[in-house]
Length: 487
Ligand SMILES: [Zn+2]
Image (cartoon, rainbow, N blue to C red; front, side):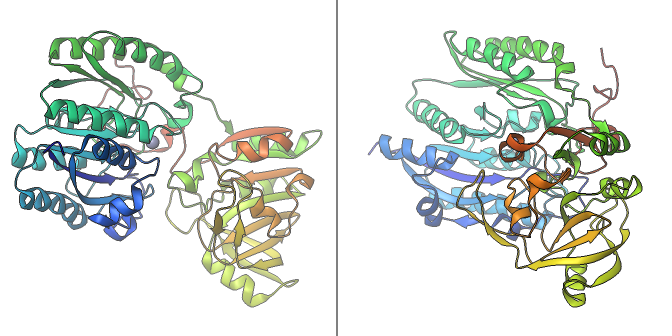
């Protein structure tokens, strides 16, 4: 045993402040104490990485709380403080603590605590004082002064999609061990940029992030540099700390850390236009699909992607498909439990008229009155054959209604139709369709690209739209690109 004792925990949420769906502690399905170790040890999660390093190094660790939820609206104030106090109580009860290691997101917003992570860290630092506090963050984290001022090192994910959670967890834990041993003294600096790019071109396999990460990796080869990471930003949190950032961590060299953050920040700023990607207006997208020589043509409703926290019940593309008399179309999906219930009551082969969709909030069009014939009713359960192969899905009871040749899948739960099984399980062969509407940002490509003739990303309104002009911001710092011209 090394004789060191550390606190570990996780608090992770990507908050869409525009969402009317508040997040509660139960949405996080929190784990406490040993349950965390039993569940996450041996996994490729960040905490899995912490545990492997500490076990190897003989460091004792006290698991506190591990709470993570899918993107949605602000966390309730009382629930935020329950998490903070749980971690604080664990620290107070532990007696001697040599280090704190926390897996955070960075874009979490709680009612009354807009800088959620910074507030947590300030509360922790007040108790542990000079004891090192290190955090791992999501690449979509929003960096604040309160976060940087209250921790000793930051390790952000270097990949998007995030496939390096484990590796960054290992790196952070190893840095904490070396710090506790007195071998290094991490110092952290950051540079905020007056830019708020949409997430659509923040992938790390292509686009501007490739070049920026190359520079970061190069910087990390310099002596005394422990970590350099990029936070292109999550644009759906209307908060004061909104904006892209660069963070650099060095071994006891604050000037070097600041210099590197500034240099990489300048490079990020210079590449800002590469983060933009034009979308096709709804009417143009629909007419292009109708007039295409062959299908399927995918209309991607990137703005109403349930995988990113949107409700998946938007109606604007459907409205336009009906207006332009589209036929032979599959539409996945519209979340509307009320309409599903009605379809079940009416029964297969029967026709009904009702308003469907857009019932969650005012961001996704208006409920649309349709007259449709019920085609199929299923329990909405299927096994994934793409992406998460073998994993069961349950979208709730499901009804397919046919409205003038548009087959609409109505589900009880929000669902991003990344797997064509959602069509097939409900009696629709997607490869036979001229047009396929998919409420998804990009994950659908793996399964649909091979048989689609064309994919069109549609500029419909919605909580996950890359077209940030759809939102009314009140709290972000101005001027900020792409709304203003700050320089
Ligand atoms: Zn992320």
